[in-house]
Amino acid sequence: MTVPTRSCLVCRRRGDKPSLVRLVAAEGVLTVDEAARMPGRGAYLCDRPACMDTLLRTAGAPAARALRLTERPAHYDGDALRAAWETATRHNGGATTAGRSE
Ligand SMILES: [Zn+2]
Image 1: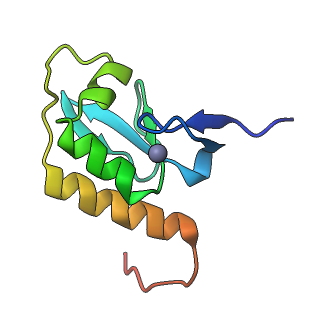
Image 2 (image 1 turned 135 degrees about the vertical axis):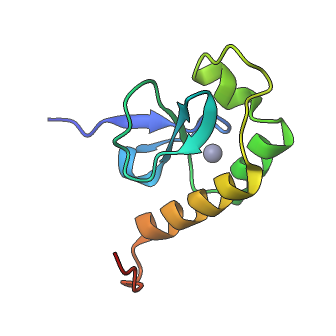
């Protein structure tokens, strides 16, 4: 069995699925799929801050292309997107068990 690999939509660096953050378009809005469980086409962004910067600087264009969104630039909340991505990447790093109470 091989581990599925995905490549970052900005830098094309390949990685194991868990080291990349999944992005989806939820009702046309670009969203981080933190649990990687949302249906539909996904695009992947790696954990490098430069890649998130590029994504936001280009108004989500690489993601819109990868997700085949009809609306360009993509609709998204940049702050929310970055915050979710930061949460997801820190979680993937898994250094400590930060107290997430849910
Ligand atoms: Zn990247």
